[in-house]
Image: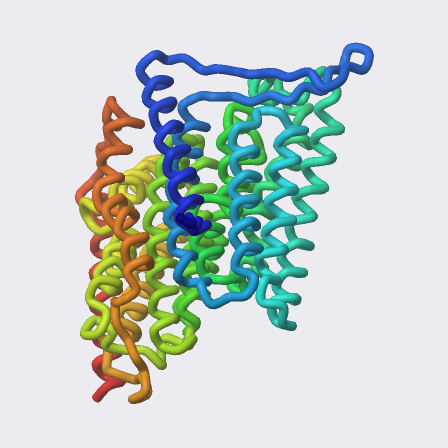
Length: 481
């Protein structure tokens, strides 16, 4: 009897098993209050030791559990999406290398070992962006890797500065870096996070990276490459308290949030719209981190990863079905032909907008209310409100053009939900996008936040969202007439 091994199935099973193990470790760490640090001394030079360190605490285990969960769904999804590609095995190995680099970066509290994962992410992402080997992919890959090299240089310079501390394990020395003399080190770490998370002026590479296959986009834009910068800033959050770096980060992230939302409203490429929405949400995460709420930023990072991976996977199914078109003006009325995929995409879109009781609502609503309560100036408050309205606006016109509008496809299109591998891989993330927000809020915030606001401020986000939906649909109805 000959056993045939399907790489996408075995990868999915192993990654799912790893996700379950990390989830159990997270529960144990939360209930016992324990963390584990594993050190391996590689070499010693006078009083300076080069040590490979792995930290196992609730943050690293929870985030790694989500990374492996999303990766398992993406690997299974790739078994159908990339089935006709002659370099299928190479693609799968590259994605596994990508996940391994992210795991190394998540588990490392040491700048040297973080650099290994950080550079691994940059190198493998370049290989994945140029996977289709055409001129557009080559240009996008070069823009991606050169933008990220700026952050790599910042990490190298910060390693040089940390020699003065006697160790590169920054997790032990966060409180020692509160002094103003460490402002250069904090600025370099912020620069590295800005390049990886594509903040202004490094935002161009993120939409360009859409030249990669859609499963890669689902992985990169949810829980791996772009979130590495946010995760690094969460780890460094103790050192940033009361620093000028926080003010600079708040301004840059708010501008990024606004710019990405505005750009998405004038874009017609399906994948680029979703990429710009990722950029907007990264701005939200870093801005709330700059206000000093690292736990809220981490909460939004996790919930966003679930529905954004689902959104990209739904987009991939639709692009496959309409013969490779990515322009949403050539789609329309897909709800009649692909009801299951459209249902998943609608859930993901509503979670992105912060629709009540979906995953995005629990993090985004809490995050915006805490931001409104904070000591921020009028410009930052204005950018928060406008960016929230822009999110609802581009989501509404995306739904109208591709899902519920008039039929704009050619008569030869063969659209259906018959691909069981793709639809089954989206089921787990679809359920997670519904229930995981509430579950995470119970785990991360057992003691609820006390938020006391005026009726105007409390209803501001809902008023802006509803008015934007009304305005978008009225404009489209006028255009149809």
